[in-house]
Length: 243
Ligand SMILES: C[S@@+](CC[C@H](N)C(=O)[O-])C[C@H]1O[C@@H](n2cnc3c(N)ncnc32)[C@H](O)[C@@H]1O
Image (cartoon, rainbow, N blue to C red):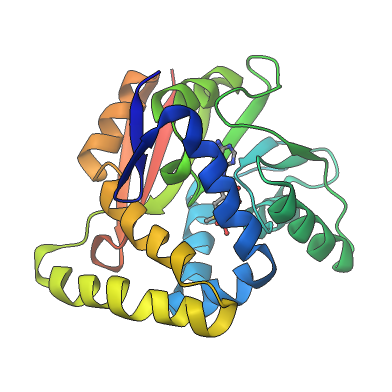
């Protein structure tokens, strides 16, 4: 076992998943309000764009990985119709439970499973579309998780990875100030938790940039990968086709 990063800290690989679990256990109840505050509501547009690019059709089978409080699962479920299915999954019980309860309150009942993206409990070729929004960054072995996503997709299936990415040079200074000065204070004020939001800012800096993630996806079996930058690269959507 080697070491890996948890934000800017070096930790033993075995420790990372537990540290990440601690973050999401702590933020689950305030996750949605913090998302709206931190992004000024922009995360809704980024997710809507992801759903549009996914082009999910009636009858499709969709797997949402690291689905958290269920924004993408909910949007996809409206598109697959009664013949399709959307499976809402996450490694973290608190996040998944919050999402499941929220969807149930809206009258939506989706199959839900606690699972680690690095070891998906689904047969090969089970899905037409796999999505992962703001989740890959937190995974210890990203290559392993991407290989699993490729495995469970049908040939020709689509993977949508929505994630924070590398901002354009002119935005760097302002983005750093916002990330390291504003975010932890906002986290402290709203969720009484500055550390989790400091981790968010740090983990974004440690995540592969647009070109590197595209390379990882190509290596995992996605023959064609399109990259869509949003908000000057604050976020990027990588859309891959499984060959
Ligand atoms: C920032 S939240 C994103 C939630 C949701 N997809 C959204 O966009 O609002 C990141 C999620 O990734 C999940 N996660 C982290 N590591 C994971 C893993 N190895 N397998 C599956 N989910 C994981 C966390 O539990 C958390 O719910």
